[in-house]
Image (tube, rainbow, N blue to C red; front, side, top):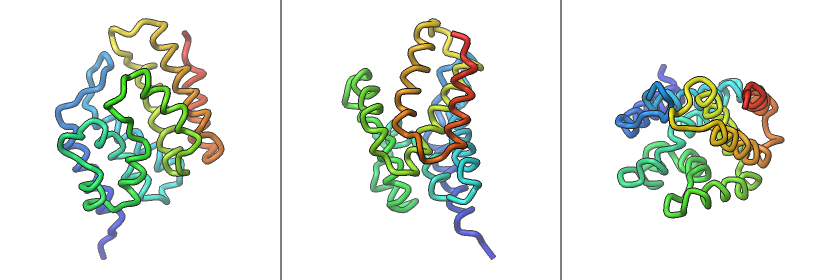
Length: 180
């Protein structure tokens, strides 16, 4: 007997790996970008006790609209993975037509208005980014830039709190480990 949810997760992993195949993380190790996506999916799975396949799929795909907008659209995601997944991904996608500072400001503004799943995903994403900066920061990032990222991430997460204490605890633990 096949498990459709497991198949959808594997299809999403394959889709994300293909979509992001040429991307690398900004950190000193230049890890394949898929590592970030799988960490966000793992954190999302742990936050929900593995009970929300839709959220896990969205976590694997959470950057595909933002990073691959030339090749992947909302409509493609909806067709392949359903509108629930596509809606979550769209909720956490920045508008790349805006300047970076405005995109960051909008994340803070929009965070309290995200759906429950999108809030969990957003905190998982920010948690994964903090861990990456702690372990293998971008070589050209100053102490100030790292500190600014952590503080901005905390502002975004503040708007997402109240949905899942476990993922909030992961973020808080990583935030506290910063020595800058």
